[in-house]
Each structure stands twice: as C-alpha cells, then as structure tokens.
Length: 378
Image 1 (tube, rainbow, N blue to C red):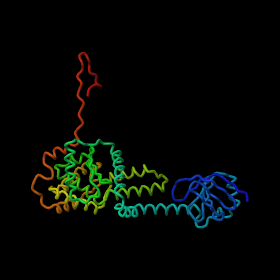
Image 2 (image 1 turned 180 degrees about the vertical axis):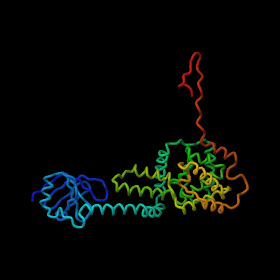
Image 3 (image 1 turned 90 degrees about the vertical axis):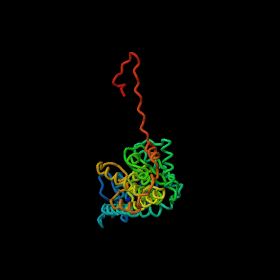
Image 4 (image 1 turned 120 degrees about the vertical axis):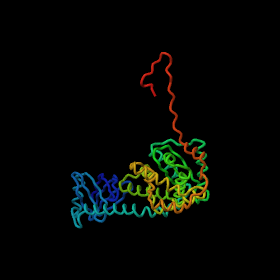
C-alpha cells in the first residue's frame, strides 16, 4: 500500500500545548514528532468536528487527536477508514470533552487536597541547603513584587535588632539561624520565608509602641520558621502553579517563582499553625523577659487600622486575627512581668530609627545677579 505523508499537529488531550508532527498513512496511521510516537489502527480513527480545510482525527480509545489541512491526505484517509465518521458513544468530540473535564477535575482536586497534604510531608525532608537557596530566590522575588523598597540598615538600630533576634532565638528549636531584614514600606507586615529568612516592613515597627510588641511579631514569625510553615506554603503554591501551568501549556520557572512570591506575601496559614506560632511567640518573649501579651495588643491595633483602610496589605491579611486568638495569647502570657521589658527605652528609640528618613537636598542660594526660575525651586 502506497504511503502518504503530511504535516499535522498533535494534542494529547490533557494539556492545551500543540506539538508539530508528521503523519504517515499506510494500512495504519503513524504519528511521529518530538516526544511523540503513535501507531494507530485505521479501525480506531474517528473524525471530529472541524472547519474545512482543517480535519481533526481522534482515537476511539483515548483523548489524543491530530489535526491537518491536506485535502488529498484527507481523501485517502477517508477511503481507507470505514469507521472514520462513526459516532457511537457520543462521538469523538464528546469523548474529548469528557476526557478534558476529567483531567481538569483531577488537577483541581490534586491542587486543593493532594498538594497541601504532600507539602506537609515533604517540607521536613527538604535539605537545609536547598531551602536556604530557595529562600534567597523567594526573598528577591518578594522585594521585586513590593516595588524594590530600600533596605534599612542604620548601624546602631541594626545592632539592637540583632541582639533582640539573638535573645528571642535563644532556647528556640529552629532549623537554622534566623536572618531578619527590614525594608522601608508604608504597610505593616512581616513575612517568614524558607531558610529562616524574615522580612519586616518598616511600618510594623512604626505601629509598635514598645520593644515587647515588636518582639512578639518577630517571635511569631520565628514560630512559623520552627514549624517549617514557609516551606510548606512554598511547596503548596509552587506545586499548584506547576499543575495549572502543565494543563495550560505555560510551564516556565519564572511563572512558578512569581506565583510563589505572591503566595508568600499573602500566604494564609491554618488556624492551627497560627495558634502554634502565637504560643511559640508568647513563650519566647516571656523567656526573654518581656510581656507575652504585647503580641495581642499590637495585633488588635493593626486590626483597627485595617478596618479603617480595608484595602491595606497588612500583617492581618496574611495572619487573620480574632478576639479568640487575643484571649488565648493573654491567657498564655499571664501577668505582666516587672521591669522595662525586653528593650530599654534607649534601645527601643534606637531601633525605631532603623529606617531614617531620606535627607532633603539643601536649597541652593542663587549667585549674585542670578534669578531663580520656578523649576529651580525645591
């Protein structure tokens, strides 16, 4: 039997990505292309609806199909396939639709239930070196998504923050030494990332009234680090993005990384994870000599601010706060200890200046005989 060939496009029925192939018709239909090799019996071929001159051929036993626009090839195929236009069982189009729906539902269920369950098992198994490298990548992506806010590193304030970090981490069971950075930003937020990284946005320091309140926020994030919550969140976000990108035929590393960065900014942990981080924070602040109930005070204050500005991307957007949580924090904290707290007034005042305001350029006095135009006024 004379072989006839033409160019076509192959679809696997699961993803939307088209793959160029070569079709070869003898007593069977051979389909060959990059990562594609099929040998279909002519008895299993079924024609689907398509606008001429395009012809779409599917397989009777699965969702795969090919398309081509070669009229002589189509005539030869029709002549050699007696069941080409057979429509039992709802036809090829119906089967294709059903297969596509089944694939979409399976991906959706996996994303909702399978990926979060797997992330809880996988997070503790990730080597620390891999998690640290991922943390650096996510950190950079978050900084970009936030608009590249400047890093705040005023020397005296940085020294106070480092001492506070060390005091809180003492006695904690952390997978790695926490690395805290401060970025100048107009919203109050704190983010825990893989690899022990924590980002404080400067407005949360501005909203704190004393060192104990800021210590409570910081220790809360350390609680998430201890439980590997950021790693679980990243695995969940990355896995879900991977599945959706696979189905949509848009699988790139940059797409996944952007999704992970966005998820880290707005990641909502479970109620159990938040309660555990609260308890961890209260214990750490008390151990360092501070008032564990200060965490409830600052969270309540931010909640009130959020009510006034519902569009703000604040700490409470990613750490939902309730009256029940406040009561539990105060119950765990007990009585307020005597003393100035974790930081002295001088240390707290210094730490509040970690993001000094940019200096305004000085006005230049015009030289003798020189006039100042409006554009030269500052």
